[in-house]
Amino acid sequence: MSIFSLRRLTGTFAAGAAMVAAAGLFSPAVHANNVIVLNSGEATLSLIDEATRQVVSTVPTGKEPHHLMATPDNASLIVANSVSNNLLFVDPKTGKPQRWIENIEDPYQIVFSPDRKWLVTTGLRLDRLDIYHFDGRDPTLAKRLPLAVMPSHMAFTNDSKTVFVTLQVSGELAAIDLPTQTIKWKMKLGKVPAGLWMTPGEKYLLVGMTGADYVAVVDWRNQTIVKTIPTGKGAHNFRSLADGRHVAVSNRVASTISIIDEESLTNVGDITGLMPGPDDMELTADKRYLWVTFRFAKHVGIIDLSTRKLIQTIAVGRSPHGIYFYDRAPVTAPNGA
Image 1 (spheres, helix red, strand yellow):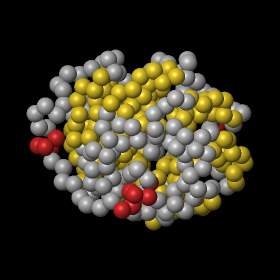
Image 2 (cartoon, rainbow, N blue to C red):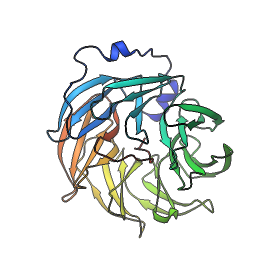
Image 3 (cartoon, helix red, strand yellow):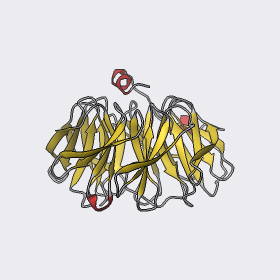
């Protein structure tokens, strides 16, 4: 789906616990390690047993679930339903719905600040950033901040004072001061900036340029682009490979994944032979396998990082996007967009 088509989507979705809990929609079995994938084009989530690599249940969500985030205590997984204007809390072990929070408008991407005091959502269709106080259970709106055009991905400074946001249509990066909920600055980046990644020591921000074929390296303190790293067309989203040095970037148009060395700021290799539209990624606990959602192929893929080869695909729903592993500790970084 084109990112621009999201702006034309309208309508509401009335979600009730009775519908979600209908017989047969989820398996009562609890597996040791589960994977949850959001099917944004079908308003469902797929629960996958990581050991058998089989889909064990499919659960309805709200309309257009794109991104997800574990609560700080890891007791719930929040599914952001952007067109339904609500949040669905599910059990991260089973995918079973726990509760809903209504009137959260256009939550395309959701992220907790590192200090867990803020929950920030980007309104891709509504051209704004919504900033909520978070008390550990419910968000309370602090500020709705107009932020044109098409805010999508976010990254925080470690002190939780600044959140960076890419603006896809205007081609900008914005820095937001969280204590005052004001715009500190904006800078031009290029065509369709998307995913953000902070390098070690908060030295640089890496930006996936989905409208181009590279990652921009931004000195955010001086608001300058210091380098571009060639990757593949549609450079989009990031996932650390957890070795302290390398990060993967998905190239949605080229259907490849590039590995970037965060010290040398170079592309050290591409993973090819993938299905169309690689997007969000997640790493297994043993760091051996990289799972990736294929937005244009109704599948999730598993990549063996030792060979950098796609070894298996799993059929899920239409337009799979966000992905989450239950065996993870609580995190505050976003799982892609």
